Image (cartoon, rainbow, N blue to C red; front, top):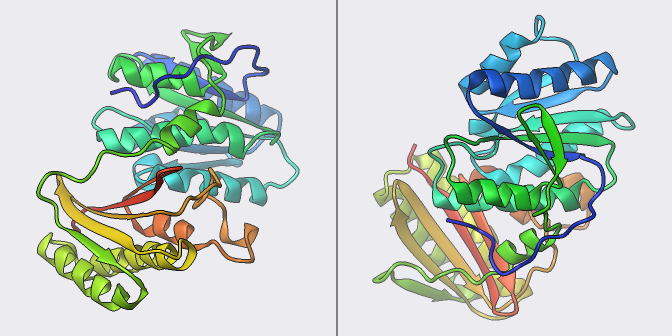
Length: 317
């Protein structure tokens, strides 16, 4: 399912600092990534490589003896919640301050859920805002033979340049920041039919925490993960009653193997990168959403004139 509708392409974009690599098969994959990394290493540019599972080993094996300057991260862990990716790149950039660097990622792969794909598409759109002007080149891999055509279309909309079969070209479908705006401000469909809702105010927060823990335990979450979910929901709910100065609504339901907790309220979060700033970058506060993104398997934040919805996904374990 496409995540972006009703907006037109933005043309006239500049250099290919954020590319979508469309690959078909193992050799095409390796030939699109390994020379890119070797070129950077030859120029003394460090690289961050975040790929899922076996893909990570494939690229590491094609490089010479795990060269210094390349950091390898399993995207299946780091990118399970795509909202963790921008802070991770920020940390890498800070560790190599003043130096040009390269980053390779694969945030969407066959088998990801619809919700995960939506959040990965939002992440890709936000990269253009988060790292504007940064001395870096990003290459994001997409399986052109295994992913749905609408996923590939969204990739063309969120990347100024396309790399395919050894060729580079500007994306005529690139939409700039409009993609992130369209996804993030869209009012989500309501919870599934029959879901109970729990209206709450400040005085109800202790009961809300017990309510979430009961549901988490019944859903099979371990004690630690149930506790993390309670902390995350409490953080979002507290922000709702303090900043929106109005009651919120909590809804909880099962979605596949995940327990989903949604907090809605009348307030609005204007910052498109909320939850993606490193704590040190915002010493005056605003770390709650960052913490939520670190402990939850997936976070969906939508905010517009209609209010704000934050959905927290947690799998058993």
